[in-house]
Picture 1 (cartoon, rainbow, N blue to C red):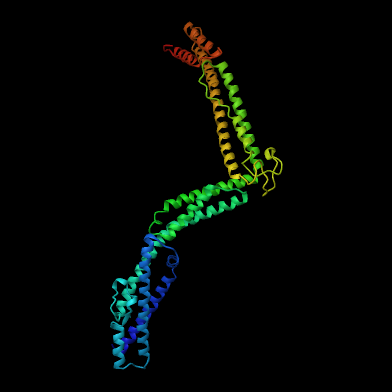
Picture 2 (picture 1 turned 90 degrees about the vertical axis):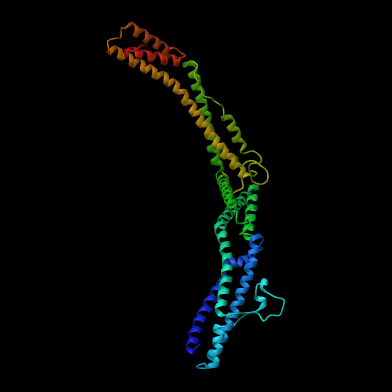
Length: 420
């Protein structure tokens, strides 16, 4: 090589060395690489990590040997202002020949020998190719692990945050929750699988993570409802009592309407009229019973008395709070009371429709009678008989709606000239 060729080659190799050194340092500092190195791995991930560690060790050994050759070449080139023939020959050997010596212990075990060996020698280009292959092997593992962690760990972190929020709320309530305990254990189990073997048993945990996140979110919402209930239990309790009163009134109205229909309508198809208000009142009273809340030290909030914000006062129970249970009972009671109210209102509406049907038939009969008068057929004996028959059916209590409907329809047809 000429002096100019040596200078050009050294410049290229320096740039190459700096770039490779930077990439290898970035690899060594990579978060996933460091986490894998500090984790107790098992399964498929442990097997691949063992290979990656060997490849990373080879990468560093090659890089050190590469640097050593390049440092030696730079020292020779800088020893004289212009290298002579001997220096050029040595530099040519270093820059183009098999000058990179890889110690036997740095080679993969499957390529070692028990016989004494001076080690493998590579050209700088071959060393770079070997480093690149080792680098790609290690980064492939990092990419695979990172893909699994990036896809699953955010959901697991969300689950853990929701579970922690629920736990904090429960501590404030003085409540325990076995379901939350189980959820937290499941989150820790999943985190252990994802850290210990993301490429094996951890890879198939996406569905389990989603379920854990959904469960933790639901438990957090339940704890939030219990906390809100504790802050305003008196108002909640009073509003629910008013709702149960509305159910009782609606059921009573349905019964009165039914009694009226039984008098006015013959053989009606009546909707079921269950009495749910008494049972709802019993459940309302049970909200303040033992085992559903912390021991009270103040007045019962049934009548609207409020406990101080943030205090432990509340109805019923000995020992620790049971606000989770009370929140579930209250929510269920509220749903059932609203359903009972709707059912009673629908029953009243259905009963009223029977009376409205009778009134509608009466109106239609009078309209048809007026039509017969306009047509000059009011004295027609057939029409008069049909009108009297329909009129008597609609004015008789109880009224047979089916027969009355047939009679009114027959009267209309006779007026229009058809058969009655």
